[in-house]
Amino acid sequence: MANDKEKSADSEDGKGTGPLAAHLPADTALLNEARRLLADNDSRVDNLATVCLQDPIILIELLKKANALFFAGGREPITSAKTAIVRLGSDVVREVFESLVDREQPADEDSKAYFQQFRSRCRRIGIVCRIFSEALAKPLSEDCQAIGSMFSIGDMLAVYHFGETYVELATDQTRTSVNYKLSTAHKFDVEAMGVSYLRRNGIPESLVFAMDRDSRPRSADRAIMKPLCMAAMELVDAFDNNKWERFAPGRKLAPKSAIRLLQMNDAQYLKIYERTSEYLFSARMLEEKKKRDQVEATEPTSQSKPVDNDLQSEIDSLLGVGAEETVVEEIDDSPPPADEQTETIIQEISENLGELQEQFALKPEKKKAPREKAPTSAPEKAEAPQLRTKGGNQFMNSVSEMFEEADTSEELLTSLLQKLVDGPFEKAALIVVSQDRKHAIVVAARGPIGNGQRIEITDPLSPLAQCFTKVQSFSSRVNEASPFGCKSFAVAPIDADHDTPVALYADCGENGAISFEARRIFRTVVTILNQKLPQIPGGIPVELR
Image (tube, rainbow, N blue to C red):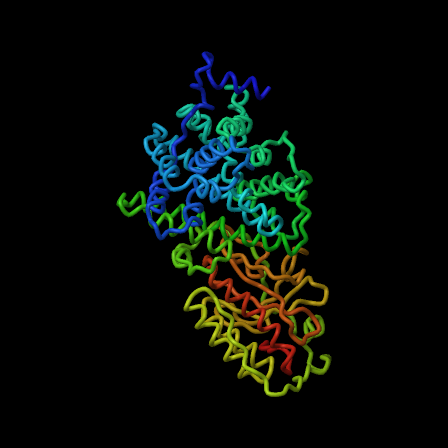
């Protein structure tokens, strides 16, 4: 059936004028940046490959040219942008880029907007594929990102081919509904046409099979690519459809979810979810900023370099290159829009404090003897952990000095709460969870929280109930997992000498977003805090009255 569609889509006279013969245009800014990097003798191949991976059209043309030249030699197919650039050489790569310059963009602005939207979807699926593969199949990470970066090529083909017709169909409709209408009314199967377009352009089957639901891998070691790429697409679509929280760690996945097929452990999925969340929220803010800049007015001559800086910062922050992040400062000034907030169950203590002391193990005579400081001989001062920015390193240096000077855990925790508020956070608190994990109480706090709030834990999978670390950098709505109903927050269990669980909490305000640097600070502080607490005597500060 797919073959019949290919034939009818090509043309009736066999000259190849149908959608499969379309010459899709590349993103002008990305193409200009790629040409600039190619002309720069000091530029690295990795940087050029990174830019090429941001646009499926540039990537397809590189792989098409590289495989056309090298298939005849009996070599293995070329499946990554970096390998294609190295094999082709600068002269041939320049010819490929020049061939893309004069391609026509979609005629009307609405079609162009949809075309760019699906280009963005390709880029985001590719990067999320890279995040998955870095954790689960590192040798295949470049190939996974390559095919992931072409996952929405069928949608781009549909927009380019149908133009205004597509815009009319897509108005106030979901992508799934539009694709169904294209299939029934126009005999255009978006997914099948995308796969056919890739095969027609010489993309190796070792990549295309991951996108074709009916194909099987030719080698067992590449079998993971299909569920991995499908899982990445599932997460990106969930994010775009405001269903991100359905995939949070601890939530039950749908029976047919591709994520189930990957058989990850909880720690692996938590890391993938958090890195993906970081990237998708920052990418959304970056795209919104670009739209605002375009409306205000931009200079064409200054477009290429900022585009590269922003894109490179996204990749660097995700893959741990260690570059200083310029995106963070933009994010800090652009908090997510306020949505209608759901009610968060936070109550002031109404009953006598003595009635709560036993449940939260706060009664002094009921407590076990505090830990004593273990004797050490000539302890060496530990070096402060290194972060990625100068400001972050200065903050961690001051925290490390404070840890060295503390004699008891009460003194340490009290000073730490104030230090966090003086630093990147608005509120910081110590929260004690009850023995039955159904309630929690704020025993010490700095910032506008105050002490003594009693929190009813209604979700058994919340980070307080399950005693796991939860850092949510950005969100467009109030998160029920937040102990205080904030949109972004950080909470983590600490190794305090207490009979019930104790958590350290911090946030940047009701509508504030926790920057990448702030989340790194929080995680680093919790790590060294849990190393320090068992070494000094004392319990937790209880400031309830």
